[in-house]
Image (cartoon, rainbow, N blue to C red; front, side, top):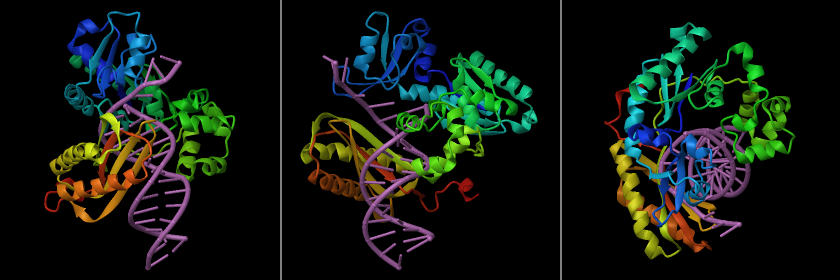
Length: 358
DNA sequence: GACTAGTGTCGAC
DNA sequence: TTACGGTCGACACTAGTC
């Protein structure tokens, strides 16, 4: 089973301010460059009717909603959404044999045991879960029930908002066939384009494409994944989430620049931030990287492995700065956004969680 | 050929 | 007419080493 909260951030705002329910709402990430520079994180359905959607520049969303003087453009409040999410997740957890947290607004549940693999009972359980979230938190969600993770994910997205879609094993081919390939998680704009050049638009088309051709086009793993997805096959089990593999910070600069004097303090601040997160989780890192988004929004990255895992802020700063200086030697356009990342994580000796031994 | 490191791309939310 | 966030994961590709 896959549970997905509808237009989550905007719904959180509606819950705490019910008068917003009938009005277009866009929850925005402002870049700090002043004015309306930034992007929409989530829009409610009233706003979507006018074309506003997540990922869209705020200025463009405002233009789409120019005709609605009751439209609200709110700044994201991640702390609040985190609280709502935690409360909702603790309710959902009670409905699962195994619960897997995916992000603030979605989760997978294995309910095979408690339903005896009966889809009628699973469907009933999903409805109970929806009712519980609705009555206890006024939260609406969409749920997909199917034989595996992939199909459940596609199914939860099939009918939104407030949807419940059940795909029984014998219905898989009929359900999947007519769907556009874009509905498959992992297929974005680029992959869609490349498959279109092979005459593939729907899942049924994808099913007809040879696995060797897919592997030739996308590599071994991705090719195999697409081949299986077309048949609705996925054997990945639902499992309690594993720990993170990286920590990163990325921020938009107040102006584009290639001046190390201007960039250095920003880099240092992000290093301190990333370092703080790693320390809080008692992990050491061995890989340090920087991320540069240029004026034209294209990206560059530089990374380096340290000699040994560390938790030293000085070492992190020194390495990040060296990477930045290196990158600047060949940097032709201005830098718009700058980021720092640490990866190749290991737990601090003696502080690891006992569960990690199993 | 197996492995590691580094870079870049794509995608989800 | 243009416009544009932040965090994370997966993996392809290439080069170097053994």
